[in-house]
Amino acid sequence: MSTRAPARDEQPGKDPHVQRSTHRRGGPGGPGRGGHRDRAGEQPRRGPRRGFAEELASLDGAQYGRYKGLTGVWELPEGPAVELVRAQSDPYAPPARVALRVPAELAGFPEEAYATPVRRRALAAFLVRRVAAAVKGERAVRVDAGGQEVLARSSCEVTTEGAVVLRLGVALPGRGRRIDGYEARRLFCELLPRVARRALEYEALDAGKVRTFLETVEDSDALRRLLPERGLVAFVADGAVLPRRSGVDDRPAQGSGVVPFSSPDGLRVSVELPNAGEVTGMGVPEGVTLVVGGGFHGKSTLLRGLETGIWDHVPGDGRELVVSRAETVKLRAEDGRRVERVDVHAFVDRLPDGSDTSDFSTENASGSTSQAASLCEAVEAGAKVLLIDEDTAATNLMIRDARMQALVAKDREPLTPLVDTVRSLHRDHGVSTVLVMGGSGDYLEVADRVLMLDAYQPSDVTERARQVAAAPTGRHAEADSFPGVVHRSPDPRSLDATVRGKSRIKARGEDVLTFGDHEVDLRAVEQLADPRQVTGVGLALELLVRRGWLDGDRTLSEALDRLAEEVGPDAGDSGLGPLLGVRDEDFAVPRRFETAAALNRVRGLRMLRPGDAGRTAR
Ligand code: ADP
Ligand code: MG
Image 1 (cartoon, helix red, strand yellow):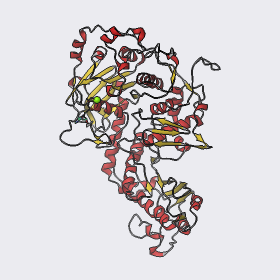
Image 2 (cartoon, protein in one colour):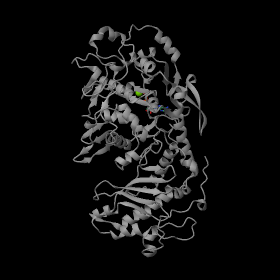
Image 3 (cartoon, rainbow, N blue to C red):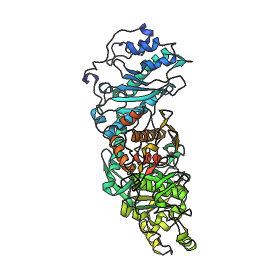
Image 4 (cartoon, rainbow, N blue to C red):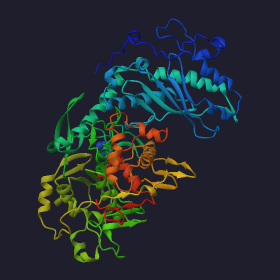
């Protein structure tokens, strides 16, 4: 794509709605100070439009609550429009919501920079990071710039016409309970327009960096879309850097100890990307893939790469071309979670209390039952690839070796280990699995591919594994197929975000979603990319209810399909609108799987199933 900035004089006519007052109040030292110079650089123009600047100054010393009266759109001449979406009620409340709209002719991006949904998402992510850099040190201004992932975020949006919308939090300035009008004027009429000029206008940006960012994201996205036709579930480019700096720092590990990824010959494939051209790396084929190797040799790090491969990453991340299918779901054990009417009988049967595990509910699942339920729920929501790490899996759900089979008779053991159904999951249901399993050889028999990590270097040991597995262990299979899942229909009456008449949807870090009276524990939902995505999940749940997409009849999977038509990467537009309609808030658009995972963890949620009284069988 070309990165040439259009010259200013090529631009279409200015917006006729912008008032062109030349009145400047207060002389050179007044509010006009913040007014920027004309593009051509000759004449200092007037300051921001009288209206807003004057209004703010005149409110100086007034009751704080009068900020509310400023709600609405304020045009700044030659600059962005500023919208006060929601004023804060007092100085200690969460910051006011503000939107800055930079019209396309002012933003000045070349058309190809915003020609496709993925480029618009990438451009928005680039811009909001610039904004965050530009407002550094301004404590009143909060911009959600995101982390290493390039997600659709409400904080910045590039429209199909090339306009830019920045949404941010501004702590409205006050002295005690009085308005600090001059500081407000500085923020809104000087700082924000300046930020818009420096960070949201193409002319002020490094065109090469814009281009790299867009092309990186576009390649990653294209690669992900290419996987199915190549029969792959994931791709890890040669040279990728998988390890992170630390458990709390998601940037790439640095230093001479870092071993860049290098594909084993047997799995090396080459792909053709729109910008990078031909790229080689490891293609993980569909089916059952086992990752083995000694402890601390990089198994979990590789799996973690596949987990986050559902997202695009920023340039320099190391995982730009570490990509997995969009329908990839990480599973883990999660004792204590709630389970509502899941058919887990393929994994759990004949519980000591006699409960019916084809319609299984509990407020307090065990490690194995929680993982079994999460697996069935993931498949119900449409997962095509499951990722499991022995570090976080329930051993008794994963394996049951020959000696244990000899000691404990099958009719005394409720669990059927995944090793006996994992092949059928792929063969009969098209669901592939990538498993990290360094501690048991039982999976060698069922794996299509075995990958060994040795000092972070992968090799393809499938052949050797076959030879090893050829010697019988005396173990016999306990099941020959996975029967599939029962589709459930959430009862919308049991999902309510309102508390005392007001809707309450809040994220507490990455781990907890407050939804109405419920605290939804999301610690085990590991592919949530950041806290703002938790907010996104909450808004998506509320949207499902408000739009009536959960009606007690539609299955969860159908409701998620409906949601995906309007929210998310395939919604055509940015996919932000419907969630913003629930509440203008900093959020990132979630996947269907995390939305479903949160729903499945809401305590008190009721599920209806085919055959329930009063329901027609579906
Ligand atoms: P395993 O799951 O095999 O026990 P991990 O994936 O947890 O091993 O990795 C062990 C350590 O090695 C971690 O601290 C991780 O950051 C580091 N590590 C993983 N891959 C690499 C690599 N390619 N280069 C350098 N360090 C790595
Ligand atoms: Mg590990």
